[in-house]
Image 1 (tube, one colour):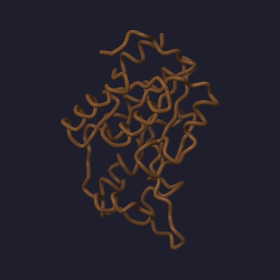
Image 2 (cartoon, helix red, strand yellow; image 1 turned 60 degrees about the vertical axis):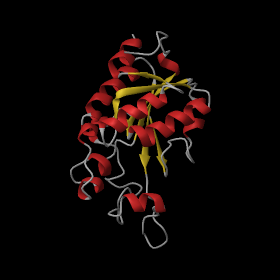
Image 3 (spheres, one colour; image 1 turned 180 degrees about the vertical axis):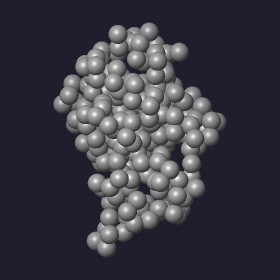
Length: 205
């Protein structure tokens, strides 16, 4: 159920999809290889793809972020100490720019208008996302993807700080654990409107 009855104007709305990438979700990706599986996240691509199709049909913009590990001069990924401690299995080639692992999952093929490469949680940090959204005349962003308490929450807060009307698609997000997911959604209600994919899609009609 949406927290608001105000309908977004589709032409001024962007769906911002956070990190639905092969290295995060595919059985042959970096996270699966490291033993970090997130079953709820595997349900997201098909669900989010339907939302993207609906928004594009209504004239809106679809944006995706890709977490990226840029290589250093020796080709080794530049992993932040925080992430290296959490995911010690990340190795050369994982999330590399232009690689299969960095790419968005196949379910989103043909649906993404703009892609930004990011190096931290937020899709706004050190990317051109804000410039693209403003140039496209966007004033409303609907955020989905992974993980709810990481990339999604950080992007949502940055969107709020930039004065976008910000929505969170609750069933379009997932975290490592339902408690984390729900706690993060509750926290984001302070800065965003928490709705779901069906209600958001219906609001475009």
